Amino acid sequence: MNIKKWIAVPLILLMVALTGCQAVGGFDVSKNLLGTLDVKSQQSTEKISLKLTPREGITQGDQEIIDLLNSISVTVDEAKVQSEEIASAKGTLHIDKYNLPFELALDRQGMAIQLEGAKKPYYIPLNSYEGLGGLPAGFDPYVYSKDVKDLTKTAMALVLKHAPNPSTISATSVTEEVYGEKDKVKLTHLHAELRGDELVALVKPFLTNLAKDEAGLKELIGQAIDVTKNIASGMAIEGSDKVTTELNANKEKLVNEAYTEVKKYLDLAVAQYDTGVSTLYAQSPEIKTVLSANTVLKTDLYFDEKGNARKSSADLTVALPDVEGIPVKSFSILTETQSWNINGNVTADKVDISKGVIDLNKQAELTPGATLRNFDENSPIYNILKNDLEITKVETTFDPKDDYYVLENRRGTAFIPLRELTYELNSELKWDAAAKQITVVDDITGKTLKLKSGSKQATLEGSTLTLPQAPYTDQYGTLYVPFKTVAEALGATVTRSSNGEYVLKRN
Image 1 (cartoon, helix red, strand yellow):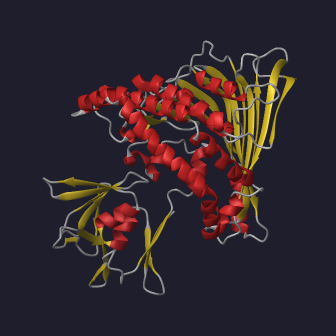
Image 2: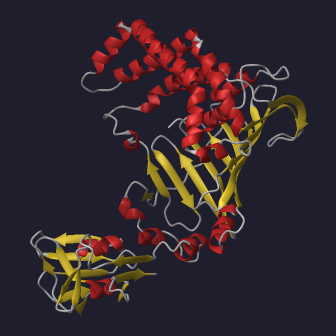
Image 3: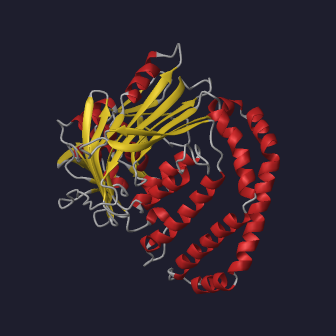
């Protein structure tokens, strides 16, 4: 994972929508924005918050949810980017009356997240690249990070070159306090605003300008082919040598062919743009609300004399259509950032994983019971998960007339497939072939229940539990168990509603 890319590219994309190639007040916007992609290391603070504006006349339940969401914010007290591959962050997640400190560390092997009150940190392994679609053994994306960075920079430069300036944009000289500096710093304050309706109007001239830039498009296509060639040459799979040879021998031809196709589609997009927008609004009028003057992006960036972005803030407000099911008329995302020690000597912090981790790629480690057991019972997160979010709560209705659940009634006892019941309760199943016995592990308590097909005698935590009738296996190999008794053994209840449905509950 390229840390710098994840930090810099969102900033660039944000500003691409706001600024074009023209200098503003003598300030070269494109040059300074592209310079943020060259940041290799830095320290920073950041705050992210959300604000939802409710509609009038909403229900109390909707208002409570909105109030809860509006209470959420993330404060990063210090983020350290040591290199493109190594970074860390310490901060606090604020939810309602709770302040939940966290630590995060990222390297080439994975990302570790330590939450206050957690016995083990959570971990996302990255070195398997499973999330990238299963890359060949031995293939290392980090080797090509420079190629990808250069390609990204070329693409951004091309976009910035042709993006028209919005109507509201300015660059002024200011002197302000900046984190990490004893004295006030001379900065260039770049301010820009973009409305949703203005964005729609700016897209067509951008596409028009881009379509005319044959040299720029061909440069980008050629660079993309080079990156593809380098990646193909590093993949030890059948046919990669042939791909590399083909790209080397026919690069100019491939560039011209690709440019012809890109040019065709850009010209078509320009020609059909106005009709396409009108058609989109006619078919989906709610989109016109989203892309209206009430949707506004305001951003402020402060660059020092070296061209480093030292401070930034952004306020994105999105208007929402007045349709059933949406109790909010707009939402806003606000961010504030300050950076220092840019391209200096930075050492990222570590998260201690010596005592084990909770692997987020493993479903068994993420059940409600496993999640709660990883937190101290007196910790705020435990209380949020258990009482506020009610992650252990289960309430499922089974209709005996519904063939999907295949409930069976034998001599007055309701039977259910054991696998269906344990799925609803997140319980684990273990099969003992020698004893021809199934062990069910309760997700919440960890208690074990041992069952045998054809036997009324079960064992619950070492004690005998007599079932009302013996479990049985049908012709398809599915084991059915007495619904109520087994559910109660696993900490749940089963009741019958007035219309004959069975209701499975667990708090």
